[in-house]
Image 1 (cartoon, rainbow, N blue to C red):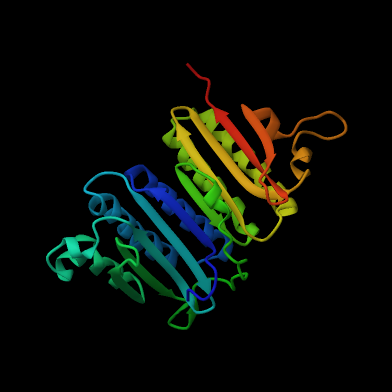
Image 2: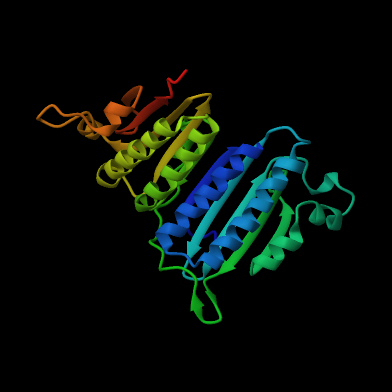
Length: 279
């Protein structure tokens, strides 16, 4: 299935708190595809198991890179979970390693689950979930994603996401930003503001993205989250400041810092910071 582009690539640090981002991403994809709840439950369980075992085993308890790629075609959903940790050779037998990462659970839930050494070290788990069960479709027809462009390589943060089509952005961005706001211990009122900000950005992206693939980064600190997203058409983010009557958008009213800048490729990126100023 890897001859087609991924619809989501998610790069994280392998810390327990980031497992909520993995499940949030899957929930966003499920919403766009009108995915059967049974398949979504299987995806969340199997992929969470693979990601959790990267957290627990790949780096000796220390944080390290965790990368998840999700592909969707008419044939099914394929998820690849990769790490750059100790790899298969570090354990005495493949059987020991399989039990260590919960392979029986993955094999029971996926139509196919393969466990292998990564091309550049570490470990890779590939899971395929079929498009039908007992003749019943498990999700709607996917929109073909745009080619992967490496745009997120210029970004940094706690989570890096490449996503296509852009219509997938509202469900995924909103879920991930709210998950990080919870980690950052936002108050309930400020947490609610995150909904309005991400909705505003997503609506703008549908109109002004330069292609059907976008990238964004999210970073969290106590009572602070930062989002960088693009690429947008040059000058398009000016429309987010307000309209001709002088009223301001929710993005302006609710952001503590808001800026746009050229990204060097004839487009621009948007940077938003939200802070919870409660005492």
